[in-house]
Length: 192
Image (tube, rainbow, N blue to C red; front, top):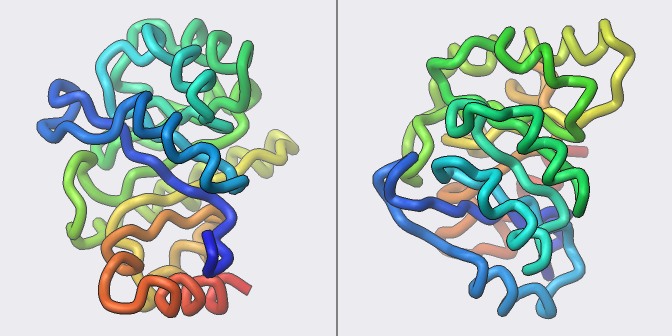
């Protein structure tokens, strides 16, 4: 936040959709007053529609859920839009075309460039090809929604992700080491 990041990306994991367990609603609520940045809450949980209102009430500005985690994609989007902005996320094995029916309904598409659930993984380069396909879909439909990438993004590959069409970048391990503020500023300089 102090280094100038525009979003705070918060990974929520339930130990079922992904093996790990992480932050929940009480943590988000407890840090909401510490920042006026956009809280981009990435739900890696089964049946996210059960909790989207609660995450919004805790301070999520945008709720990203996995297409693979629900049987009612449109219903989940509607529930999120009742309280804020909605994002749809796909895992590396999910084809880009899977999000096409929902592009006009969401504010963001998040393409995972690693398997969700664990930090420190290397970017799967083929996932950036999906970014390019989705960016073309967005442009062909005349939409102005964000296209986010998450997983293995570092200073060496961030430009390539942006060239493929991403305009929101999530960086975890590449930022949260050594001098966090300097790392964040280095990313921001690359994004300009």
